Length: 114
Length: 110
Image (cartoon, rainbow over all chains, first blue to last red; front, side, top):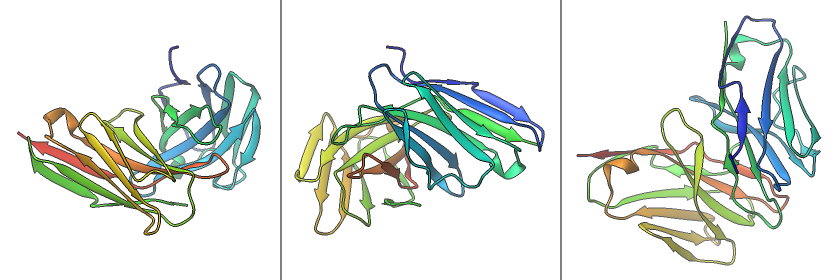
């Protein structure tokens, strides 16, 4: 398996634009996590899905953020409209989330909003 | 919100020495995990210890868990230059959520 695949690796966009980050989890994994990493706040859990269903989105900073998982092999995190304070590295991770197992991370998307 | 908190925030040691990092957390957990992150890369899972376990070993890694104190430690023995990275503890909660601390930056000096 190629691991968790995220795209794009880098994204530079202007304030106000819509940004869509993509993630392909490891085949067979049933939990998917979106995290945001910044120097100030560390690694924050934004939302996680179990069996394609959003379980907890309490970490989503505001209504500008939305996430979907239309099937077991694909998820998106959308920011609309984007703001400079959204600049961060966004990680997607997946796990076989039964009774707690480790998460496998993608390489991340470095987002810069100017 | 952060669940785990690592201590120290940064650690520099000589190659060959042992490195110890600590983690404290707040709520009941299903398991506790340690991850490593090299600069500019994703996190890599190192070891998982379940709430009913007290100690676990994997190669040069030794993890302890004290659920009464809500704390864990990661020991890296005979450190190498390649161990330079950030290390994160993460709590696996009963609803399968995984929450990370802010990490310890470990620097191995040659």
